[in-house]
Image (cartoon, rainbow, N blue to C red):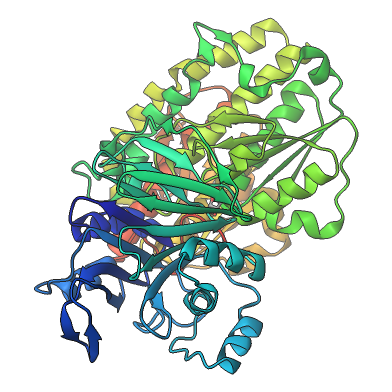
Length: 621
Ligand code: F6R
């Protein structure tokens, strides 16, 4: 939920840290801070420094990184060793005092942290009784004070002792002014990676923070402690045993983490979807032939599957709902979908011949992680679908299917969603093929259609001005109902989530047939109904539902199939998507809804890349 970056090397780090924080701002944006080791000869800030000794200089500010930049403009704060943090508040309001870094009593240790210390109240009490003075309301502040307690000269050992005392989650990075050539770090259940640079080394919550400096990374695992210097990297377990781990090379480019001329990341990422979809099919769908080695299951294992569970949160759970419909229809295997945050509290049943699929773009969502751990403890085989190579969920799965959408920086999921949908199509067809439950002709028809989807998505994007014009008319409405049936239902749910997330307008996604059991009471002249109404097997039913809301004075926007003239009689606005087969309309109909949310939010002056109260990776429960 928060973003961390650290650098130790030959260069001055202020610019490196501020730029890194900007790239991490999608993880949290309510306050930010930086701490740098600087030579402090003589007397400074009421402290007397010995010649050539180092002190820690901190600058932090409530608000976005731009506020921090304003604060340090004109100041000399800079050095070759530093840490930075962008916060998404959990304990304590987003004020300057609660912003990270936090320090010990003697201002010799500075700490940034991403996660939650669940037993902080008890630890704080203990530390206060020993004379420690706290200044913030955060859970994080116990960390520098505990490190101060445990520090006998080597902060790494203090960090190992700390890990044995704290409960919860955390990526922790610390500076020690007494040892000014190193940075110490640790990880429990919050992402942390080491970037290997040419003239220094980095720590960060996520690769985009340092992609402009290096593509070589090492992943830090839970309960590991790290010491980085400008020319060395050491990893230890919680007991101080040294660990060796090979680095890997990231294939993300720096331009994929930049706006490249677009006004916002959200818009850029919507427009990147033809590419993300194509990339996600690449190597799996070749000249009409489907190969899915990553699933790592024999045909016999697939044929014996009696149940599939799919778990996910938010947008990913909508891809899961689509997956359920596809797998059940094509492969005839029963599928249960559950939101991860509910899964582990109900003593879930894990059947003998079942498969457990976790969908998570970040691979770090704590509830999804907890759900796969629960399922694994009951003997489930775990396949994860994620966009982030080496993420925690990926590492804890028996098999990983990567979506190749490229880094997604906008907080709301767009291109990763359509990439997840593609994986759902491919997995469902593959299971159908292996079980022999779908005939070759139908398989060929679907695969052929999938191959031309990127062009169809592109043709809609070329027509985005039309959606913009519709958004210009609709942005003042107070309530939006998104209605869909069958394959249109996950789209309706996702359309509503997108709109509420970025525009803060009340929106609900509903099964169109369920509307008269409650939501229709919401319908009046202030309501826009967005109907997902492609030419599919439930088209006529959808028309009746549209009639029902229209006669209650709602304004109707229909997302329909090109050539459908009839629909305009039922609608105030129509956006046409290209013709495809019934099951594939999901991916075509979501694209205009993403654009609709974007343009409505822009009309309302919202920050679409960083909507209020949200963070990209939800690493707290
Ligand atoms: C919505 C959105 C969130 C995420 C959810 C799960 O636009 O981005 O609802 O989908 O937080 O995140 P992942 O997929 O990373 O597990």
